[in-house]
Length: 383
Ligand code: SF4
Ligand code: SF4
Image (cartoon, rainbow, N blue to C red; front, side):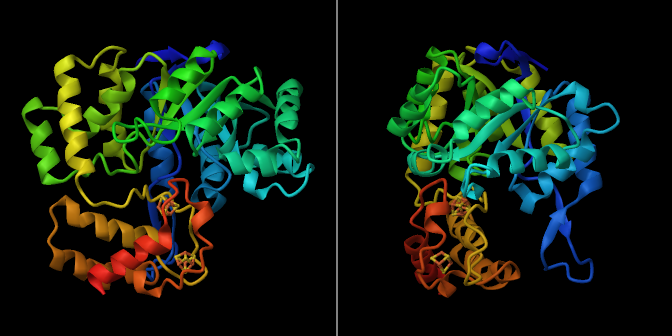
């Protein structure tokens, strides 16, 4: 494992962090394999501990991941001496904050679920201009975050972010107390949201930069045959290319990967062990640019399957519909995708035709996808 300093905190973190948003799952009711799923806890604990045994020292969860169960499973995974080996990060769900007192109540609940008396890194979750101005400032969330650090419940404070660069700078500039930020970055999103400009802006002010979505929700792992062909002669997998693009940057402290299987953990450990700043050559940059161009030429919906938009009050299985549509660009035939739309999507909820355009899901999407419009497109394609 390779380690880097995380901004002005001075803490050494592993280049690879364990994201606990996409843990392995199983049907909750074994008699209904098509029903609702929950975390496959024994397997999740096994893969988290394997990562830690091999040098991963940063574990990232959040209040809402896996319907609130990610923090519980993280707490259990970190028993038997594992808690002391890692920097534990979780996030304050700003959207659940209706009044000032909610901050302490939620933080205490998180400490209980995680079976710990302190968090090493605590983030305000998924900030945008709107949530910052309309929720955090009126409810004095930032002041309480600083107070939580002073009380010892939290060691380092930061925020995760999904909005435009101007909003990012507004939040960074609000206080010199910020120690780190977490931004979405990958070779498709260099100029999206905070992007590379935000990464440099934060690093120049001494903030550690944690990268999330380095694979854009898996889209850069499961690439089209055309993109796979670009990478094939190099002997490196599409995943390795996407991760190396991030590790190459001196401003980045670590990247988070939401690992859902032992194979993913093993692959990522191998790649992290080879990682270094400056590892991408001029020739490599050209290869990545080619892949980027090829992907941008495809009509895909930039859904990362994060499920923040769920549940839809009308039962639409939003991410599964988008995944089916995106498979058209990954070498699947129209007929295969239509079958998937008619048979696979209904296992999780209604297909796109069930959307009544109520708009409830739209403000929840960190990718700012025009969900009802894009669902109409999906329905028109397969309906
Ligand atoms: S706009 Fe459509 S998908 Fe979104 S919540 Fe309403 S019905 Fe569900
Ligand atoms: S539509 Fe948006 S919120 Fe819903 S899963 Fe996709 S990226 Fe996440």
